[in-house]
Image 1 (cartoon, one colour):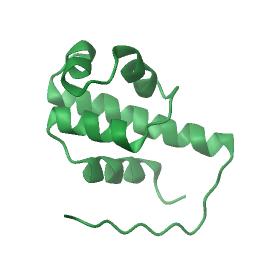
Image 2: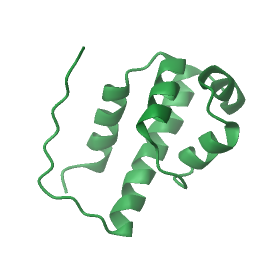
Image 3: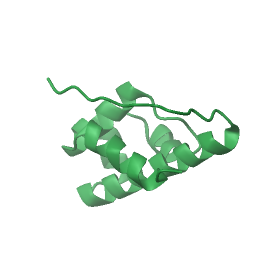
Image 4: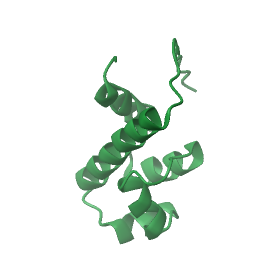
Amino acid sequence: MTQVGVTVTHMDTSSGFVDEVRGAIAGELRALRARSGMTRPELAAASGVSKSTLARLEAGERSLDFPTLLLITEAVGADAVKFMQSVQESLGDD
């Protein structure tokens, strides 16, 4: 089992920050699906996550919870930790 350490020095809970995180996750999800070569219906079938949920996640309209992240990354053969590292990198070190 791999352990991941994350240090949070400041957590901005404003809606702007939440929107920024959702946007970063949305972009990474779209890229992940594109790399997998799957359509949204194919990913929905493979992951058990509904097409409408995938659409809302990819549009940044819904927050991604950890169980859903695991279902999606497992369905495409990706690593959830690496996915979140990509999200963090896309957010930068503001």
